[in-house]
Amino acid sequence: MSFIPENLKYTKEHEWVLFDEEMLTYTCGITDHAQEMLTDIVFVELPEKGLEVKKGERLAVVESVKAVSDVYAPLSGEVIEINHRLEDSPELLNSDPYGDGWICKLSVKNPSEADELLDATEYEAHIASGD
Image (cartoon, rainbow, N blue to C red; front, side, top):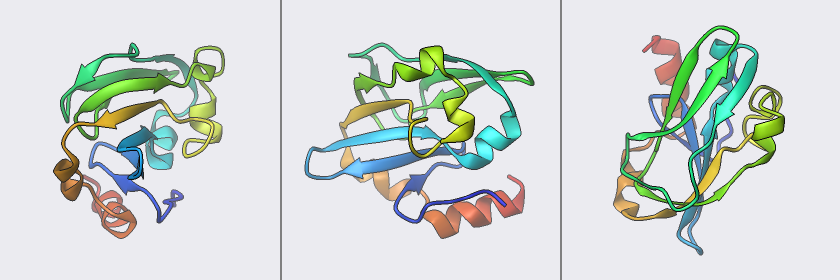
């Protein structure tokens, strides 16, 4: 069973979100479940700093030995920081998806969109349902 931290929010597409409500920003990445499904990640195409995305738009691309997968923006926002460590060490998405394997940080454009994200219990049920 995948590890699912309680302090994060999740999408049905297997992205996670960590809010900094004081700064109105969020950090995002792919879940432990997603990295398990992809297996060995060999390349990450990161977004450009300053990129404006709407919720559900492609944010990044993750390539593994098995597949190429899009990473979608969990919420609308502007990319304000990128995890450049993934350029040389894409395997961080496998070894530490909720820590050093974060993908980027974005400013929050529409905080009410967060109401549609799943909590850890809902995400666990989503995985169990096989959707």
